[in-house]
Length: 164
Ligand code: SF4
Ligand code: SF4
Image (cartoon, rainbow, N blue to C red):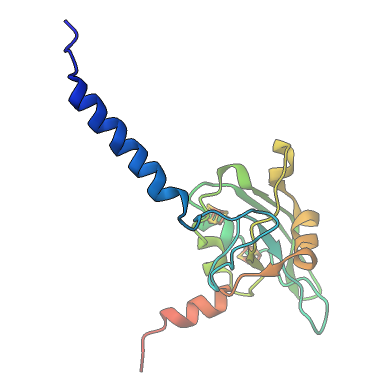
């Protein structure tokens, strides 16, 4: 059986609700009119996508195809095919499937040549699933499109070095 609500209680809760609405009516909003207004992104923020880098001096690809990123990836979303020529290794092909990426950054942390980096920024939306599968071409193009996040493999490895 439904419980009867007294008139006094009804008035009380109505007044309380009105008071709550009035109190918040003149408060400064906590939301911003994105994308017209953009909040500053924290310095160490890294975005949801990746790039493969090139050496600024030689313009050679930094990736040596060592497959460390592929082996460490807990989701198994990286696949690298290696080839050797000119006295070093290269990535013949490189696939990173963002659909299963945990954003754990382990692939970046283990890279011995700073070849794979996460990106600083959050505005790379896609509308098709296939656009989440990044091949070598897309990953290399990302280097020119977006700023790299602060952390690279070598920086992170140095941070883990025991203090002398
Ligand atoms: S961030 Fe983590 S889950 Fe994503 S590709 Fe790298 S290692 Fe794999
Ligand atoms: S991105 Fe780095 S870790 Fe991955 S294959 Fe290339 S050199 Fe090795």
